[in-house]
Every structure is written in structure tokens, then in C-alpha cells.
Length: 547
Image 1: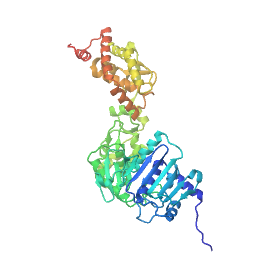
Image 2: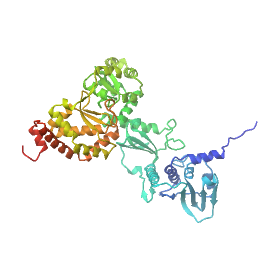
Image 3: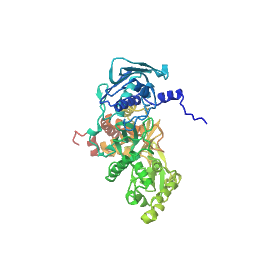
Image 4: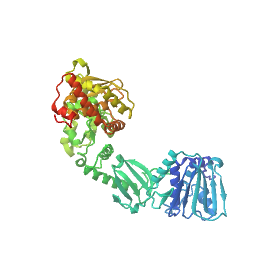
């Protein structure tokens, strides 16, 4: 019998080198970590379009044999405890993937050009002595300003909490965590809570990854004091092997629960975190019964106890759905959002009902369990039948009262309408639409998204009776409808960009002056049609004159 050893093909080593790093910033972080592992008291980086340098005052390579063992050979393991991060001396290869590398240390120079020389490198010795280690890289592909700035900012973030000073282009970018103030300090980590939606995790000062706040219930920064078990790319924690991380998570969850119980801000991440706690069975019914993890289409959030008191049929609809607003306003149904099902990872109302019952055992609270089990559900189609005729009627001008007609003519005023469209075009694609009167029990206004906007007769009365406040409300509705570029009589969803555009137009574009012009124009139209106008409206139009 013959005993043989496994081998690795050189091409595999080449792929390990060039495929380790996702970005130059990550490759430079490896150089920073190597410098600190080598005992450096300071690391200086310069970053430019042509390349980069990394310079430290660490121990460098003491002799030629160390160059062979620790530079030339990939995979030589570190001795346990002799470094903060290093394990198998693989990280330096990340820099080879993006640039030629010229290393100077002691009396040696190593030049690496992996794209042209492959796995060979040039070695020189007996050169003038250089303390520590200096790496000069020349990019294979020169970056533009956008990429260079991105690498710079990423590297700042990656090494933000290194205990050894790190300087980039002459600016110190790292802080020693021991010198900072933290929300909580434990034997395992420094923890700082912020209002951020992510939790940044640093392993001994260098960034590992971000976790969504829904993972542990808080956003902020964690800097471990002890090494976390990492994957080879050092961008994730080996959860099955790490003994430190579970202790940190326990402290984070305790902080998160304290914040929730104190009534701190709750959002979607918070509610998803609470759902994860409910599913984990880590908390008793007495604790979870009042957690608000169910959301309705009107923006309210309900607990198990509140849901158990519900006497209306339950229907699931998309948030901002018009039908949901009407069902809720008329108290025909409790309208929960489809996002609630997604939050609970449930596929249907039937699954939701069973999930509710499963959260409460008869021995814990028999009455609560029974009330949850007795909840009734209906489909969207069944809910629609409760509304009867959901009509959006167009009303001809000759069907309007004189007051309504005066208001509509005011809003159709060429100067007013042109100015409104002009303001819209500065923020979004927009073309003029014809204004018509309408009648609906569901909406104050609606649009087909391209040609027409209908304004409900109730809002036309606002122009003539509501004074300046009434005009402002009507103009806000017109802006709202112009921002819809599709028919909005069905689903009525507003994303962040919609609200951002609305806020910018309404707050920043001087619509207050437009409201004053509109009210003055209404007085003229009312006079033409012999429509009486109250003294309050006249006073609002001419605030500097006695009436």
C-alpha cells in the first residue's frame, strides 16, 4: 500500500488570490489588518487615481526565510494568539487582484504583477534598509472620481474602530473604542445604540457586516473586544462556531426589549423583530400580549389583546387601498395589511387565524384564545360586495350650483393652472390635465393619470366656504393627483419618492402665494355669477383691509 497526499493545482491558487476581494477597499483593509497584526503603531494609506501606498512601522519581514514562509507561501497558519485577525496568511492576495504590488521591507523588495506574470514574482535583496513595510500599488484599471471616492469612504468605514491609528490621505479615520462613550460595555463588546436602520458589527475594530435592525431589534454599532469566528472572506460570522457572538446578541436583545417596553419608536424593523421573538417562544404570553405587531390600512398597529376585542370581519388588503379606507371608515371590516401576513411569513388568512390560536394555550388565557379563535375572515371579493356601487361619477358643469361652478372656473384659471403645472414639471414629468367636477363616496379627487382630474363637489365647496385654509386643502389635493401618473381609483399606493416629491412641491415652491391668488380669483368668479360670499372669505382674501 502507498500513502499519498492531496495537492492543489496552481490555477486554483490563482483563483483564490484574484477572487477573494470584492473591492479594492476590502483589499486595502486586509493590508491594514496585516500591518496591525505585525505590531504597527500607525498605518498610513494614500489613495489616488494611479494607485495607492500602505506604510506601517510594524516588524516587517525579519529575514529571507520569512519572505519564503509568509509572503511566497499562501496558507501558512499563524500560531494561536499571535495575531488579532490573521489565520492562514491569505489576505495579502486580495491586493494582487487589483494592482501591481511592490513591497519594501527590511532589505528586501518583492514585485508582484499577477496579471502578466501569474504566480511568479520578482525578488530583490541587499537593498537599503526600510523599517516596517511599505506597499506601492499601481491599478490595473484606473478608477474615475466616483469609484475612487467610493473606495475611500468604504475604507474609512471598514477601519473606523481600529485601536491603532489609521490615516488616509493625511486624515485620521479610526477611533480607539476604549476612548469613546458607549450605551453598554461588556467583557465581549462595546455597544452603541443609534436610530439607524442597521446594526454595524466590527470584529476587533474592523467592519464585518451590517444586520437589519429587524434581526436584533436595535440599530447602531457593535465593536467586539474578542475575536469573532469568521468565514475566510471575513465578511460574515460563523454562527455555528462563534462562542462570543451569542453573548453579544443576548445583550442586544435585552437592550431592544427595554427600548420597546419604554415605548421608544417602533417601525417595520421593530415589528419584525417582535414577531421573531414571538415565534422563538422566548417570552411569555404576559409579555407579548400587548406587543403591536399587526397593522391595518389606516396606519394603526394592534396587539393580540386588541385583535381579540375586534367584532368586525377581518380582510387583508394592500396598504393605501381605497376600498380598505372605505371599509374601515364605515366600520364594515377590520382591514389588515398584506404586509402583516408577510411580516409573519404566512400565506393566507386561514394561516393567520391558525397562527393566532397557536400563540395562546388554553392554560395561559382561555378567554383570549377563544376570542382569537372566533375571529371571522372574508376575501377581498366578499368585502367589495359590502360596498355596493363603488362609483366615480363625472358631473357636467351645467349640473353644478353657481358656487360650485365659480370654484371650478377658478381652478381652471389659465394662469393658476399653468403655474401649478410649471411647478410640477420642475419635480416630475407632468402634462396639463383638464379639471372636471365629480361625485364619489370614496375620494375627494381622482385622476386617470394622463388627461383628466376630477374634483369631488365637496371640495369645490371648500374653495368658496373654507377661506384660505379651504383653498390650501384643494391645491394640495390637485398636487397629489398630478403626482399620480396612473389611474388611482383602485390601488392607492404612495412610495417614498411620491411623498418626497409632494413635500418638495408643497413646502418649497411658494404655494402659499398661489393660494392667495386662487382665493382672489374665486371672488371675481363669484361676482360674475352673483354668488354671495361670506365676510370671512373676503377677509381672508384681503387681510389688510377692513371688511
